[in-house]
Length: 459
Image 1 (cartoon, helix red, strand yellow):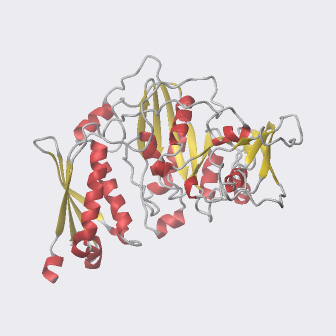
Image 2: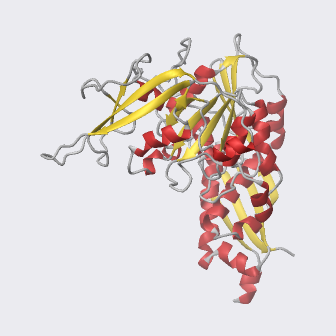
Image 3: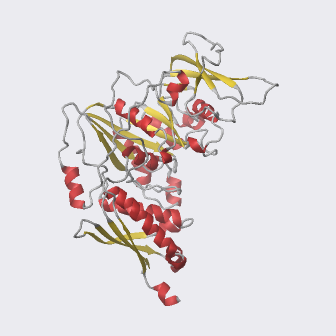
């Protein structure tokens, strides 16, 4: 048994592309983006809270994103080509920041409509910044996917690259808008922004910021979303003070529970009047939930609040950020409400030249996309710190006679025990990794992919 185990094990997985090419979750056909003078969040969570009438959303944007080029030369040519500018181009550079494992790469993939960034349950899956490009009609969104904000102690402890510290800050320097992602399913961290996120926001207070509450589908008690909004924004959104008042109604004759309702008070009033249930407005995503006792909330908007840069002492005592201009609640993994956020981002774009040709989906090379997708699977199937010691070496990258992509990659591990874990009993683990990675690569490149993985111990 020792001889077969010592030898390199390999698995080949062949996948075939559909004619039209698959894409990530989302509703169908594209339509033009309306451009009102100001998007007041009519479809956002804040819009629902403040009672802004919601509009019937148009169809999904960017239904047919371009594939990633299969050769490095073709990708470099696309990146170097002069952008095919429309007559009135618009552009928006978006930085997405948040704690590790908040769902930043998942959201990026959903916004792009195709999976090009690695996603894993383990932290620090994204190791360096990468750009994704969404082009629709005259507007281009440039999405800056960044590693989770961390500190120097954790970088040293986990032997992470120095880029894990600097990339999020570099992205903020070039961003027109920043999305701050919070995982509401994590009850240990959801009630406050991390110190690294707060420091980043405080250093760049001039960059408009939007709060995005992710994984709301995993939150059983939906009424907690309002409490989280109040804590994470310090009760101030879009420069105005919000005060959420909850009044629990006593009803001894019935144990029935009704949805949480929101009413809007006049800005000039000091106190919000009670409104009847038929005048109140249900918060998006909170209705029909059995954990909320029959209750009403009132929202008071006050005078605009200013933003100042905070010192270390103020940041240490702060839990939220009063500079958010909008709030969105979504489930990025399933694509829920992602198109709502996407339309908002298109509306925030300002006149300016495009940075990329419309045929570009990501700034990554094809090999980087491939490495990241395979590493994602390794992170998923290997325990603890084992996957972080795997070195990937691409031995072959060729286009076959029929246009298929032939990839051979060696996975080098430091110990024989790690090799046995990666191969799995009967080769089941490495087979599953090759199968799932091959499927994702087919989705990214929109061509047949023949992926062969070999596992070896580092010499």
